[in-house]
Length: 180
Image (cartoon, rainbow, N blue to C red; front, side, top):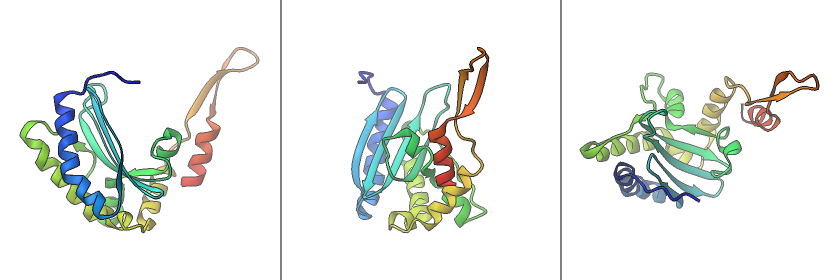
C-alpha cells in the first residue's frame, strides 16, 4: 500500500486529464477503472469490455518528464499482459500518418498543462478513434510492429556449475509470440 503524498504537479495533471479526456472516454462508453496519483506519477485507466485507455505520466528524475496515452486490450492491471498487449497513441499515428511526428508528450507544468492535454486528446481522437469505437485492426498492426522488434525479458540464474546463464523468460516469450 502506498502512502506517498501526490505532488501538486501530478495532482494538477490528473485533474486536467480527468476534465478533458474523461468526457471523450465516456463518449465511447469507457468507464473510469482506476486512478492513482503519486509524488512522481499519475495513472488513470478507463475500461470498456476487454479494451482500455490509459494515461501514464512520470516526473521521476531518472525516468524523465513525460506522459503517454496508451490503448490496450486485456488486463490493464497485470504488467506481463499490458506491457505486451498495449501501445502508445504514437504507434497508431505511425501507421495512419507516416509523416506524423508525435511521440511521448513532455510533462507539462503550470499554465501549460491544459494546452498539452488538449493537444494529446486531439491526437487520441485523430489516431485512436477506430480503437475507441471497437475496431482494433490498426491497434493490432501497431502492437505487432512494436512487439516483433522486442526481445522477451531475460532471466539470469546460476547453472549447475555455478556460472550465470541468461534465458528468455517463458511468460514473456509466450507474450511476444502471441502479440507479434
